[in-house]
Length: 380
Image (cartoon, rainbow, N blue to C red; front, side, top):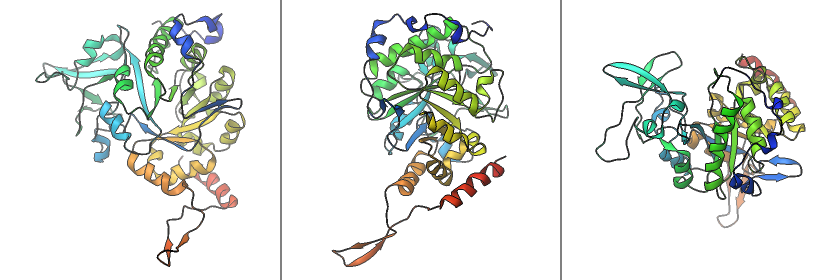
């Protein structure tokens, strides 16, 4: 991969980019649970999505929920499926020998002779990738697995329920089929990829999806602008969302630096929606109506989505779904807050008594407008 920017607009005949017949045939079938009608892609209800399954791992956190299940593992996905989730989100990369694997970090960290070293996931073969961490074969010990925290500290990847790493194909075969997959197409933020490399990776992933998705709902998302445009050109079945920090961080590629740029990219490329860091939305709430007016869907991610009140505010704003770590708590809160409840009290005729039911918060339009003006100030 060379450090040369090649934008999708510069490539002729991109509609003919895929050569695999099964991908082309599969594009005629739609997944259940989503609507791709004349008005564009629609999410049928407020959606809760499990981040990397049951939640991401933060190994230096004092909260045991962040270290309960190995993120991006079959167990994490199936544990999340026990709750009223619609999707799990996970990260897919392709090994050097052409196998899509589920792993978030760009590098695997391990230890040898007392020294920590790192290897890029995409430069490993599948067999090499699977040697790290717990092993499938009884009695076999895998290579140690470490992780680097945001402050640069190296910590052992220890969780309560550990599990071997998995491939995308295994996830399709072993995860509860009612659970949708939000597949993040993972690329390194600090590499500018050549067009041919992006095409190769995306074709490889689409091949697995086309063969194994069946009726499972699938959404693609990515922070890589050209990858988003290419995967949209390569197939018409699955919605493609552009991931953005919403202006909370800055990148060399200006298309990544604001919600306005994300909105523009989606319109130009015919994408179905945006997944924004929630702080980007709260700092710029007026953009929500512009996105909705364009018939684009809007989802969010970020730590604030583990706070029930922040999730409810987004529901009121018209955001269609949230990616969360605290799956049990947020799915319960969403049910309590947005399930239909027209009265605070109901009469039980059989028992001849009044039963008080939990009422969801209520805001007048004036109060909601005030909150939307206040929140950006609170999270600066």
